[in-house]
Each structure stands twice: as structure tokens, then as C-alpha cells.
Image 1 (cartoon, helix red, strand yellow):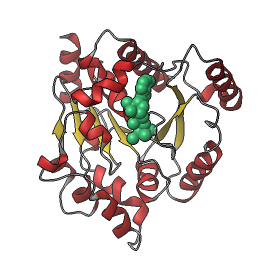
Image 2 (cartoon, rainbow, N blue to C red):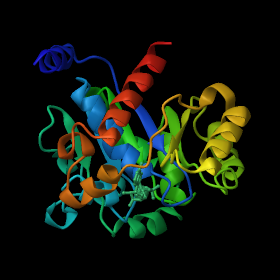
Image 3 (cartoon, rainbow, N blue to C red):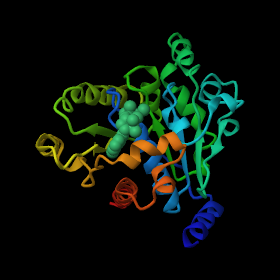
Length: 272
Ligand code: ADP
Ligand code: MG
């Protein structure tokens, strides 16, 4: 109840404009969508006003939160091409005080192609978010597993980027390419962009390689890596098929507690 009161009073203040955070890694299956859904949910439960943008045409975050974009009149595609305002595409997520989603649709692949020949093609998402920025504390963008125009738009719109990575042998391999892309976007389109943090996901305590990879990543990226690691947890992989974030599907699970702890570390970093 205290959280709800806090959120409402923050809401009344109008409280400035949202920090925009992209979740990016061109590798698939590293935990981008899982982190997008569950970090957003954990922050909303902590009293923050959160909007999640599903920028992956595969729509894992949309379906994982119980939103069937086929039933929606508008989704991110319409916002990007200027056919709808972002307000009109927002859906609220069940059992959360202030957690909203702009769902995606497979048509978003078309938007990526249409944008290629457009002037200022890197800025479309940032423009689409302008009208909703004042209503939230945080806007997360779940990126597709590529470094194409949708990811570039997300990085151009964002204040910072979280890089989820799976603790496996090839984890570091694509990372230098991703860091180069982030630098390129920073230099060319978005001076304020920073790396918010690297997040080690699917950590498996029974696997020695996991510890070794985690150690290497920490040595290489030092203070940029979150202290919290997300363990492999079956509730995290089950909850999307029930259309719920893990916090409502299995509140006491290791997965739920881990994302609540990540939310705490994330918020602490905002104050530092
Ligand atoms: P990405 O968005 O980077 O492609 P996902 O978040 O969709 O990755 O994760 C890939 C798969 O791994 C999904 O089936 C997801 O449910 C599962 N998964 C992600 N994180 C965990 C975890 N910590 N424990 C168990 N399964 C996980
Ligand atoms: Mg995904």
C-alpha cells in the first residue's frame, strides 16, 4: 500500500521525464526479454512508473506479459511510422499498479525495411517516445537479437543500455562488436548514451565454466558489471507461457527474488 501511495504522489508531481534504458545484445537467448519483463515488473512493484517498449518483432516480451498484439488496434509499428501516437498503443499489465507496455507485431520487420530509406532514420523511436516520457520514471526497450535499425533506434533514443549476457564460453565474443556499435551511436547520434551495466544471466552454480566466464567478464569490464547475477531458474522460463512476469507467477522463487535484487541495485546506481 505504501508503494502505491508513493507512486501516486510521484505521479501527481509529474516528476520530470523518464530515463530510457535499452536492453541490447545482438545474440539471441541471452536474457534480454526475460530481463526486460522482470526488471520492469520489479521496479513497478517497488513503486516506479514503468513503460516497456517491445522492439523485437518476435514479440516475446508482449506475449510473455499476456498481451496478444493481434488483438490490439495499434502497436509499435504504427507509432514508428507515425500512424498512431504512442499513447494509443499502450496496454497496462495485469496485477501491477503502473506497468505499461507498447506491444510489438511481426509487421515491425516491415518498419525496419521502410525506415532504411527515410531521412533521420535513427531517430524515429526517440521521436515516438517524446509524448509519453513525462508519464513514467523508466522506459525500457527490449531490442531484437541484431544490430539492425531497430536496435540503432533504441540506442539513439536511450540514456543508457543494459547488456544481458549468458555465462557461457562464447559470451565475450560478440561483445566487442556490440561495444563498438554503442560507441558509434554515441558519437554519431546520441552523445548522452552510456553503458548502464552488464548483467550476467542464467548463472549455473554447478558449472565451473560459469564462474570462469563471470570472472573474465568482471576483470574486463570492472565496475560496469552488476553485482547481482541472475541464476538459471525454471520459474523464469515458465512464467512467459502463463503470460505473467515471475513476480506474480512465482513470487517467492529464486528468479523473482533475483530480479527484485537487481531492481534494488539498479535504483541504487541511479542515486550514485
Ligand atoms: P533474448 O531475449 O536475449 O533472446 P530470452 O530472455 O528470451 O533471451 O531468454 C531465452 C530463453 O531462456 C527463454 O526461453 C527464457 O525463458 C530462458 N531464460 C532466460 N533467462 C533465464 C533464467 N535466468 N533461467 C532460466 N531460463 C531463462
Ligand atoms: Mg528477446
